[in-house]
Image (cartoon, rainbow, N blue to C red; front, side, top):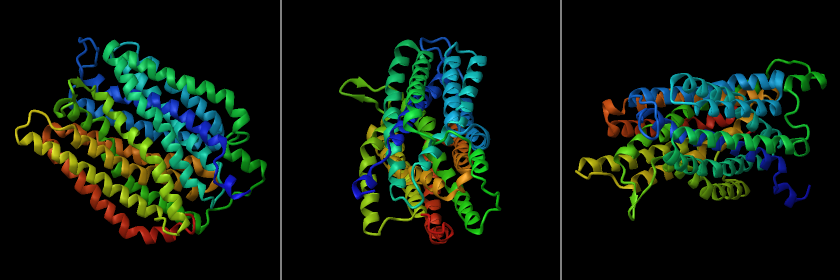
Length: 439
């Protein structure tokens, strides 16, 4: 393989990114509406659920948490029984069905059933798409980290568009119509996946890992010390990453309600719809993804690329700085301003995106490198457990904004994640040694 081709990515990466884009459009389009759908009155033109803000925060956290708990079980099923490619199909169908059910009417049965279907679908879908990307690159391939950053950037195009499209439609026709549009997106991406996967993916993800090992007559050996050390690294970083996501996912709950009530959303007489602000982070990912990819490439060439634990520590500190900007918004309100400037919110989202790009795609890549080869989907599900726990914690945080006030919540999150980031820096050398050359 020549140098030029060695830098290129296989077409399968782009197919998997496109498939994930449809699913992410569906998820983030629905998520942009969910908190507002729950808190708005059932009898107004948008037809909400009329939940209290506290109850909505808890439901929001529980639902999103389950979307990241079920990937653990979905990953096990993919590794042992279904295969990754089939799991993607099952997951997409569940998500599409859940969104249609959610749109039936604003009563409890379709609400609970629809969210349940979406959460189960995520369990099949999320770990398996990412695991297949890892299979495209051999261990030690320098393109792997860049591939995950590129993948992350590509599907964030859909994440950027989803709140704007679904939010605009919901503002005119009601929230449930927005859910239908989200469901259409995941179905369309599945159709393209069914048509193109046989020729582009080849054998990737076609058979469960357990069957492949049996066919290859691979002996079931106990995990080696190096494998156990690498698994330990995954679990240690999972603990810290949990608190990163607990803060980051305030975007869909406490930051959304704060924006709706306290941020001046008018520009030259035009009022920006609250759900549109959830497009800010993916817009920044789109803009910054390529510079970050080039940065890792340049630093790798000169031997200065930070280790995975160091990148994650930096990501946590940057998230905390983002919440410090939100304290500026609170201070402006406390000084007597009727609404806080939008610039505080934009700066918060910008630094949250810096932190996300330092941590999230790098973490996905890390799991595919450190997990034993026959357990990648399962450990990808384990990695998503951090986001499950984060949403539960984040839901509690969002539900207490009314009790403690946004200043105490934003300041507390900032201080805590910055402190944890420095703990990760302190542990980084030890963790790097335990990765045994697979950074």
